[in-house]
Length: 640
Figure: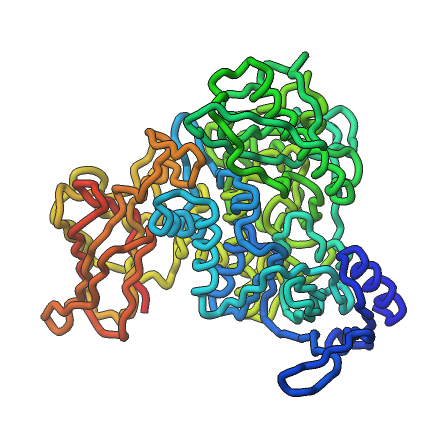
């Protein structure tokens, strides 16, 4: 980028970000960016010195992740755990995106397929389990801190909150640096990295890099989509503003604020109901047929008006006597976005890839939420249904890696709602837990880029098996892709047996499928507790790690809900089926030795790591679950 061009662009960005007193310029390197506050007259009473505070910093990482929602957290954690020095840049004071206390959307995924969940595992399940242990009261502000803890405890990961990546500094068709403004410190950061991952939803960094993208709805003919409009247009699904109320035990008055927009419900579609109004009304939504990002503040003001107009109708129309004792307990001020930019990758996922369950050789994630296209007019088009459930899936679909990196920016990956897909495909894959699976995939891919000094496209062309195998080892699930890790020494056992069995087969622990699915049993379950599983090799092997995947009942959802639902489909507690206490042993020179004891286990993927030893057998003894009478396993692996 030429100095003159960067100066102009940087100044424009600074103005747009309400950053006053900044002068930006650039020489040939992004490390020479200058941040001058020429009118700053600081006098330090403690040391008697005056001058201009130094508020510019340059940091270097191997991977930079932008956006701290579910996708960004999983991307950053996956990258860091796989040995890559990573930074997570989040423009809000809290993590979680739409699921944070600022917006309070349920962290949905494949919640319901034929009456059962097909819940996501891997890092996103770790997060939800961590919340079940640390946030029994199901508080959204506490969830913010649970997420904070989950991220900052990673030793290879740096978190930057209140920081927006506002400009990409380019070197040809690669991003060299991200120019970031941290509002709380008035600092301008230059973040240098080899690989950038944009999980921010709107994708400002990717857009300023020149990554190709589109907005709006494709016409039917482009991808032969049944549910697309006849002709392409600019409509995008809107943002929602949520609220919640509290029963005060006595009649509570309500007077709408000056900006409230009168709501009557006259002519409203029957699906615009008030069934769960105490915990918010998701159809208080405004979309756009043009620049939904540029219109955001105008739409936010409208949404605040509509929210109070609807609550006024609930409280004062006389149609809701059950609301007499209710008062607003929390109202959102930051709308929850569904759609804006969709960046173009080497492949664009479309409706029929999902509905016809296309088998992708580079599948790295999955989804299964309905094709749930929200009425783009939102509350301003109340005669239409608030959303169109075009298609309900009977099984999960694959999502390909080629849709998770840029077609024209060589070191750019993305995950979340901004990936390479059509508007109709987005109506399903935009759900947060699905986005989280994409995040774990691209974070893992970034670590492979770092390992081999390659770019994202090369991972797909040369190392897709390695990417898929690592994801599955880390407990992500890829539909119809069994694990076949050649490094897994458990695959070379002479014999595997258990001391009891009530269902399944202990040999299933070696079949590479880590859940019961498609009507097939892939587990072993004990007949009571304690229970043991033993593996034996004909010749001694060197061993340093045992990894197993236990049952957490993936057919039941565990995300936090405002209504704390607890039934056959939703649980508001730690899964009873999960192993709590277990011991590991190895047979060395004919004698059993202890390798480790795990008490109060908190994850589905359980690892026992130890100094390398030579052994001919291992044994896992499981003594306690969180409530189930039997223990169930899906996989057992061994590594040197």
